[in-house]
Length: 628
Image 1 (cartoon, rainbow, N blue to C red):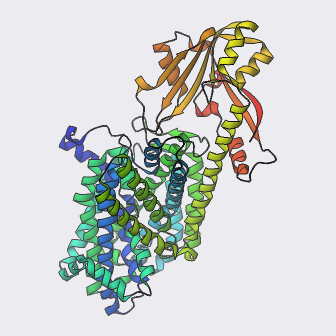
Image 2 (image 1 turned 45 degrees about the horizontal axis):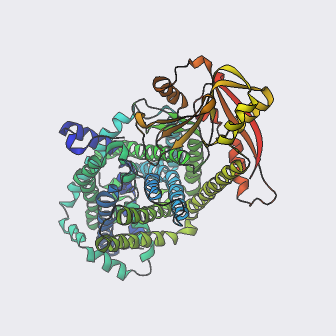
Image 3 (image 1 turned 180 degrees about the vertical axis):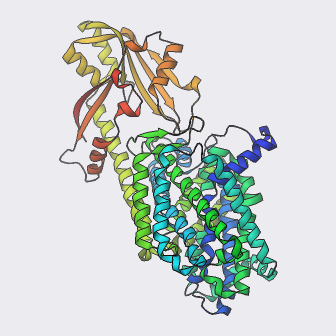
């Protein structure tokens, strides 16, 4: 997480962060010129040269003002101010809203559902972005030679396979070249567009917002299809907020305002100028912008840009999955940290496999970026609408922004989100069903996990022995105490763990020191070491320890043990035994159907020993059955 205030950064450090942000944050929106204008004009039904020219002005106006309102106004100037200790994204925003609500608030469940749905929609987007980006880049081969079109699918699949194969090694090294490559990419976009608009400066008439509105009014029959395609130009806008923690608000804002936004507009207007002078270039206006000598280098640059864009989205999916585990939305997953310097660089093998299968299926099923554009947009616009709702509540009712000024503004932005979402839902049967189905499946799994976890905790509580009662009877029973320290991993600090009761019942012994350790996830992304642990000393040499970690941090019990050694207990690591409960969850006869996925996920999830990084030689797992 970037901990620097903009005023603390030197101009050199700020420049480094701006260039770094280009390689991570703007890949998705930066590759939209490959297909957005072409697909939007085709959606308008324009065929003749005169119709194509008319469509150029109207659609350029719509793209321009969509970028102004959705990305610049909503994300850059408003939503990026809703940071959770510097972090952004759907879960950071959900945590911000949740911690402002009382435990009995009726809004807690709707906010939880909104967070789950937003994350699920992001996963849908994470499958479509690599597929459409790589396909659209490789389709440039058809401009080089129509005979090469038969190799587009094969080359796309090879690139995608390579992309997912190297994910496990992380982006710590290759990430250093991402920023400079994207700097070249955006500079090329701007230069190509500028070289063309000088031949048709009249294209800037499209800057008038009335031009776009009038075009929609004249094409009411296809207005829904047009808006559903125009939204492709703003896909990736949410990444500005989601990736804020890696670079800070200021570098991302400056990268957008000073480079990315101007270069995108220049390229879109350059494509428009080309089509005004040469309507036949509608087959691929992006690649037609390039002079013949630059076509092959541009193909390679576009392939690199789309791989970078795809990698950024995939990494974002890993990060979202990790946060979902920390916040209790999904079961524990094996998370591998791929960088010693960047805490946000993680690899989740199950998510990688899930996304790879999904992306390959999309490429084989849709075969062209034009067909795939029908599936794109639903997940993006849905996630953007959820961002608007949660940000509006947080800014106005928690931060105290003016209701009179900002409620109407958020209402207008939400109306725009709903227009884009509504127009994309009309593409449901053309491919939009796919991200919707993936999102609904994931939401059902998340809600099953959240509900089942709550029922499991309730079942544990109802059959548990309060720790105070257990300690009160311990003096009378006077069990044999053996040397060493026993650390019991517990979900609550005030109940006697089942593993302890089983150990005492069957082995008739207690360790001379007993620590009940509860790991809790904070609503903040990171926790300082001096706030990491809180200790309560009890009678009979029992102690409760609560370990706090942020929702973007990896829980690591041995680090907490090191803090305990330094602060309170002078024990040897070889004298520690960890006791971990390993319950087998079974369904009651009256259990709702929603519990079936929870029981399966609970049985197949990563073990607590692995998740908490407990050395296997020090771990003792004690099991039992519990009904939900």
